Length: 181
Image (cartoon, rainbow, N blue to C red; front, side):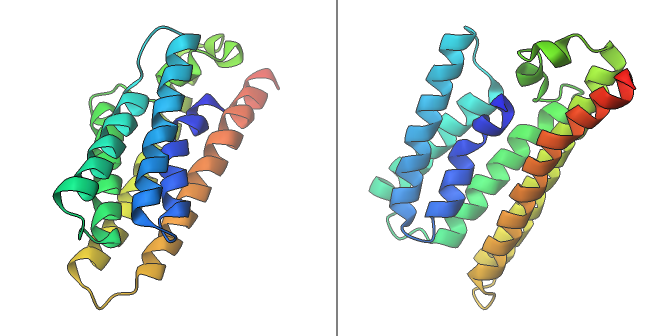
């Protein structure tokens, strides 16, 4: 569940962005700040996703607020999805799934055999990376072709997030049941 909380800033941004881009960015930044501080207090280390989200939403909120107020919702969504895709995909490509930092905090998962622990984390990290890849492609299409409807990109984002969240919440328990059964 800590992993899903790490994505709270982006989830909140996705939901609120249809109301107001600026509100969504500042709320995502505030949420990222709270999540980062909470996680740091619980275990004095900074996780890639937490710090990355904090920096991403701080820079986007400040950039849109002060440097380019005309930056479109589609462009902001594309930048956010692309940065998060890269933030999650690069460590995965380097054989260091980002979800390991969260899974080690769960005593149930930390006690698994190392090969199962790594396999589950590769798959969970891969699910989130694939979700952000799909969102980046959809948002990029809308950003670079103004004729495409934004609602289709939003729908793809919500479906991708729902799939990643569902997989994250269900697959580790399924793997544990297979281990114990």
